[in-house]
Image 1 (cartoon, rainbow, N blue to C red):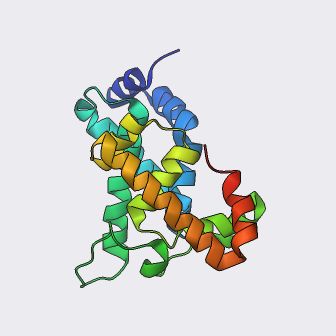
Image 2: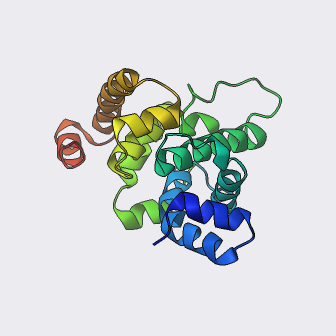
Length: 190
């Protein structure tokens, strides 16, 4: 089985089967990453992310492919949000939440997945805090990989993760009450 880097190289050389395989391997994770933050253009963002990975594959370096992939996805998300929201205003997307931007994910999908309350609580967090929690709990990335995605140190990842957990727990408590939040949060913490 070819590695992701080999698939990127083959795709760069024109091998569309390599592109299909890379998309098959990572579409679900990228779709999940974007759908929690934007209402439209999710598939387009997935495609733009993979194309940017091919174009910039020389920048992978020593990072794992998944940390490189989510780092590119994060940059594509920020570019998308800057272009589609708050036009004309200077905004700090690292400090704003999805709710602040006026976006909402598909409520139908969130309900179907049984994560609507958690997702709504996470959307109140600053974007990088939301991304951090998703990368830990939904994508299973290590501290080192997350540090590469967010372009911060591993110790900073740990401290931000601690603050993000406290913030999402508080948002859950505000939304559903202390007891229900404890039940929801207990199933997510590792």
